[in-house]
Length: 394
Ligand SMILES: [Zn+2]
Image (spheres, rainbow, N blue to C red):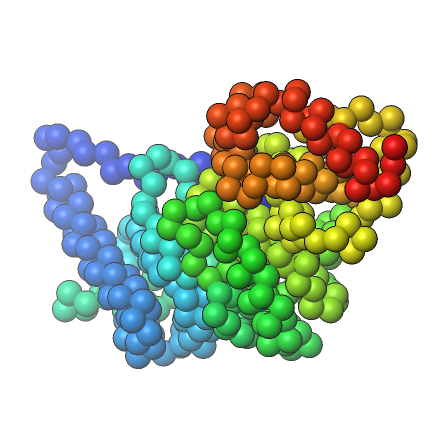
């Protein structure tokens, strides 16, 4: 399953420059600008320290009363291998040595180098937002108050901004949890094997950094998943650069499940779109199961039921349904469609087809001739009997 968070427009605070203002206003504006520059320097210094793993440097501009929270934040950002820190300040106000500022710091993890977007959309899941107070003396700013602002309508699935996380780091994955009852190391081996499978299908350039996996304890899982009691995992795409795979920690480590979810990350990272559910889920199921013997595939009976119930005529790009009565059947049919495309045309062409349909938003009819080398109706006519025979249906 995959979902991505809405990006909310954040109004940029624009400083109105008024020509010919009276002298006292200009002097005040200059003081604000000086204070903002000093705060920005402190934030840049903190970011540099963070990126090089210098905890003392990270705390140098922070009042000791804030160290517990800042140390926890530092540990989480380092745990996810922070690779970009882009701060900005708005609404700077104050006087004398006490100044207030709204701070937003955009972060990226595990090798991703994010840039400040030219448009006004900010991926809120990847941004630390806080009301801050600073003590400025002799041109030097020290953080004395830090109150994070959260978006109540969008609780974070991965609470790296607010909780104390524990981590286990593998070759291609970082596994994290916040609940004491959940041990990230127990999922590490399965996660690394799944990541190696997902890597073979990676479509982003550069390829994904380490895959970020979060093991949600029962309360967290219930909040994250809402009414969707059937789900065991999902991918939370917080931006084009960042995607967290969130797993129900009550389940035992499951390599197939992780291959499916990390497969989403490998094939969708770098985009925010993707509405062809049959292709998105079919690709992820294919990465999970590839050309495994059909007897091993766990959803064959769901596929048979779907075919019988709907009188399936051989269409591969089925209109998706999340109706619980047939949800699993759609996953199974999507897998069989992708399995047939992979078996008939090879994985390289399959990936090109997927990229054209999902990442470029083309229809299968448009995408099939240039990527698979055949018209879509012909492909469906080729695959329908294969799928029926795999399911021993004639
Ligand atoms: Zn999925």
